[in-house]
Amino acid sequence: MTEQASSKIPQIRFGGFSGAWGRKSLGEVCVVGDADHWMPKTASDGIPYVMTGDFYGINGIDFKNAKLISETDYEKLSRKIKPEHGDILFARYASIGSVRYINTTKKFIASYSCAILKCSKFFDGEYLFFLLQAKRCQDQLKSSTNTGSQGNVGIDSIKLLNAYFPEKSEQEKISQFLSSHNELLEGHQRKHDKLLTLKKAMLQKMLPQAGASVPEIRFKGFSEAWKEKDLGELVIFLKGKGLSKSEIDPSGTEPCIHYGQLFTEYSEVISTVISRAKGGNSYFRSISNDVLMPTSDVTPRGLAKASAIDESDVIIGGDILVIRGDKKLLLGSFLSRYIRYMESQVLQMVSGSTVFHLYSSSMEKFRVKYPSVAEQQKIGSYFRTLDELISKHAIQLQKLKQIKSACLEKMFV
Image (cartoon, rainbow, N blue to C red):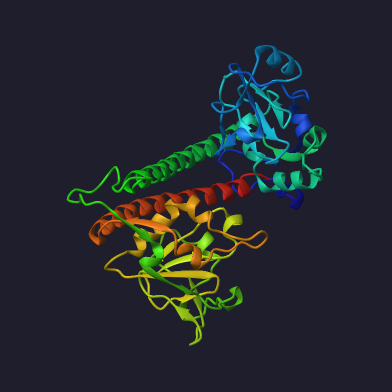
């Protein structure tokens, strides 16, 4: 086999198939079009008008919350082209290149923010759905994107996008395999999302609401009203010191936390510190039960992060507020969850216009409702177990996504 021919064969292939794949443009493989470029009026009852913002998950379309239009407008818009079972929706605006395989017979119309791809009988729609997610196709799309106030990909550019195709029977074999993997991914995603929903619901029920001194749900054996005080009456406030990103060194011997990691790496409780630094006497160090909060760039990140740390002698970098309380009164694992739950109140304390800060003087006035340490321990243990389950599903999801990415790279030319 020549080198040129071998370049048209995927790295991973099912048994029983041979020969080089043929190169085609999407315009040769399918009809590509979009609805008329006008915006229909919203109807109180009618037919879903799907936009790219209605895409969710791996292959989901949110028909339930999509805009509704009248039957008359649907008929006008669908004269040119309309989505049907087996077609592909291709995002031309916003999340450019996102695709959805239509596996429903539900009646709906797609806005002109989406292209509609209708495969000929010699090509498999699901194969094309996966092919368009592969890096080679996505890279072509990036080079075809029209820049400006609102980036977009034109219909003609989509038609010109080229890729390699085997015989239809091999296309179907590939799409069947990847569809099964998608089902596995979606199953884990649903479990993960349900656990997140459960956690949110239980936080609402296991922490007192506004005006209440006890939560809706409590562990057996606890009945006393929760106390309420300003945080400044319960803890002292300290500050991290130094530690730039350049000082984080995998060969270092001392655990350390940079403020940016509180946004991206850690949840409510830090059980294992992932970074190391060479250390020194000039750094500030944690003690077990401290609560850490980033003090800069809070509002743009959209979250009031708070993380309790189990470990002592961890180097704590600058722009980190350290909240240190007495374990006999207030557990860090309880306080960090409480702060995150009361996120909207914390964000009201953030000040600044271009650079945003959270100061200890503001957090001193933050009102905290808290039960006995014994009850705090019960609550913390419950949520730690729940967090472990969520983490396990998140890790499994990540592994499955990596497998899918590898398959998209190696099963297509």
